[in-house]
Amino acid sequence: MPRVKRGVTSHHRHKKVLALTKGHRATKHSLYRRAHESMLKSLSYAYSHRRERKGDMRRLWILRVSAASRAHGLTYGQFMNGLKRSGVEINRKMLADMAVREPKSFANLVTLAREKVTG
Image (tube, rainbow, N blue to C red; front, side):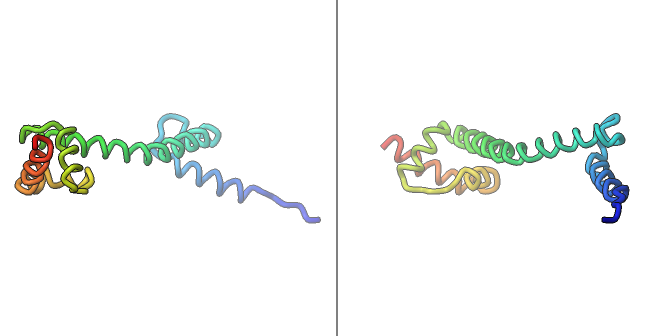
Protein backbone atom coordinates (compact mmCIF):
# COMPACT_ATOMS: atom_id res chain seq x y z
CA MET A 1 0.00 0.00 0.00
CA PRO A 2 1.42 3.43 -0.94
CA ARG A 3 2.42 5.94 1.65
CA VAL A 4 0.13 8.95 2.13
CA LYS A 5 1.58 12.36 2.84
CA ARG A 6 -0.94 14.50 4.67
CA GLY A 7 0.65 17.94 4.57
CA VAL A 8 -1.79 19.36 2.03
CA THR A 9 -4.92 18.21 3.85
CA SER A 10 -3.88 19.52 7.24
CA HIS A 11 -2.64 22.75 5.69
CA HIS A 12 -6.10 23.35 4.16
CA ARG A 13 -7.80 22.54 7.45
CA HIS A 14 -5.50 24.89 9.35
CA LYS A 15 -6.09 27.67 6.82
CA LYS A 16 -9.85 27.22 7.16
CA VAL A 17 -9.69 27.52 10.96
CA LEU A 18 -7.37 30.53 10.82
CA ALA A 19 -9.73 32.21 8.34
CA LEU A 20 -12.68 31.64 10.69
CA THR A 21 -10.80 33.23 13.60
CA LYS A 22 -9.75 36.31 11.66
CA GLY A 23 -10.38 39.29 13.92
CA HIS A 24 -9.89 37.41 17.19
CA ARG A 25 -7.36 38.87 19.61
CA ALA A 26 -3.81 37.82 20.44
CA THR A 27 -2.71 34.30 19.45
CA LYS A 28 -6.30 33.17 18.98
CA HIS A 29 -6.11 34.14 15.31
CA SER A 30 -2.56 33.12 14.51
CA LEU A 31 -1.65 29.89 16.34
CA TYR A 32 -3.64 26.89 15.12
CA ARG A 33 -4.25 25.19 18.46
CA ARG A 34 -5.41 28.40 20.16
CA ALA A 35 -7.40 29.37 17.06
CA HIS A 36 -9.19 26.01 17.01
CA GLU A 37 -10.26 26.46 20.65
CA SER A 38 -11.38 30.00 19.90
CA MET A 39 -13.30 28.87 16.80
CA LEU A 40 -15.19 26.17 18.69
CA LYS A 41 -16.15 28.62 21.42
CA SER A 42 -17.21 31.34 18.98
CA LEU A 43 -19.33 28.97 16.89
CA SER A 44 -20.98 27.72 20.07
CA TYR A 45 -21.75 31.30 21.14
CA ALA A 46 -23.10 32.12 17.67
CA TYR A 47 -25.47 29.15 17.81
CA SER A 48 -26.81 29.92 21.28
CA HIS A 49 -27.08 33.67 20.66
CA ARG A 50 -29.13 33.11 17.52
CA ARG A 51 -31.73 31.51 19.78
CA GLU A 52 -31.28 34.12 22.49
CA ARG A 53 -31.95 36.90 19.97
CA LYS A 54 -35.53 35.65 19.55
CA GLY A 55 -36.22 36.27 23.25
CA ASP A 56 -34.51 39.66 23.06
CA MET A 57 -36.76 40.71 20.19
CA ARG A 58 -39.87 39.55 22.05
CA ARG A 59 -38.81 41.62 25.09
CA LEU A 60 -38.31 44.65 22.84
CA TRP A 61 -41.77 44.27 21.28
CA ILE A 62 -43.39 43.92 24.70
CA LEU A 63 -41.56 47.05 25.89
CA ARG A 64 -42.78 49.05 22.88
CA VAL A 65 -46.38 47.85 23.19
CA SER A 66 -46.32 48.55 26.92
CA ALA A 67 -45.05 52.11 26.41
CA ALA A 68 -47.64 52.84 23.72
CA SER A 69 -50.53 51.37 25.72
CA ARG A 70 -49.49 53.27 28.87
CA ALA A 71 -49.56 56.48 26.81
CA HIS A 72 -53.25 55.72 26.23
CA GLY A 73 -53.91 54.91 29.89
CA LEU A 74 -53.77 51.10 29.95
CA THR A 75 -51.08 48.84 31.32
CA TYR A 76 -49.61 46.18 29.07
CA GLY A 77 -51.40 43.37 30.91
CA GLN A 78 -54.76 45.12 30.75
CA PHE A 79 -54.26 45.90 27.06
CA MET A 80 -53.35 42.31 26.13
CA ASN A 81 -56.20 40.94 28.25
CA GLY A 82 -58.66 43.30 26.56
CA LEU A 83 -57.43 42.29 23.11
CA LYS A 84 -57.76 38.62 23.96
CA ARG A 85 -61.30 39.10 25.29
CA SER A 86 -62.34 41.05 22.21
CA GLY A 87 -61.04 38.30 19.93
CA VAL A 88 -58.22 40.27 18.31
CA GLU A 89 -55.35 37.95 17.45
CA ILE A 90 -52.40 40.17 16.55
CA ASN A 91 -48.95 39.08 17.62
CA ARG A 92 -46.61 41.27 19.64
CA LYS A 93 -44.35 41.98 16.69
CA MET A 94 -47.22 43.46 14.68
CA LEU A 95 -48.53 45.37 17.71
CA ALA A 96 -45.09 46.93 18.30
CA ASP A 97 -44.87 47.87 14.62
CA MET A 98 -48.35 49.42 14.73
CA ALA A 99 -47.48 51.36 17.88
CA VAL A 100 -44.51 52.96 16.12
CA ARG A 101 -45.77 53.38 12.53
CA GLU A 102 -49.56 53.62 12.83
CA PRO A 103 -50.45 55.30 16.14
CA LYS A 104 -54.07 55.99 15.11
CA SER A 105 -54.89 52.35 14.41
CA PHE A 106 -53.09 51.37 17.61
CA ALA A 107 -55.28 53.86 19.50
CA ASN A 108 -58.34 52.14 18.02
CA LEU A 109 -57.08 48.83 19.38
CA VAL A 110 -56.56 50.42 22.80
CA THR A 111 -60.14 51.69 22.89
CA LEU A 112 -61.37 48.26 21.82
CA ALA A 113 -59.35 46.63 24.61
CA ARG A 114 -60.49 49.22 27.17
CA GLU A 115 -64.15 48.44 26.44
CA LYS A 116 -63.61 44.75 27.17
CA VAL A 117 -61.54 45.34 30.30
CA THR A 118 -63.84 47.90 31.95
CA GLY A 119 -67.15 46.77 30.47
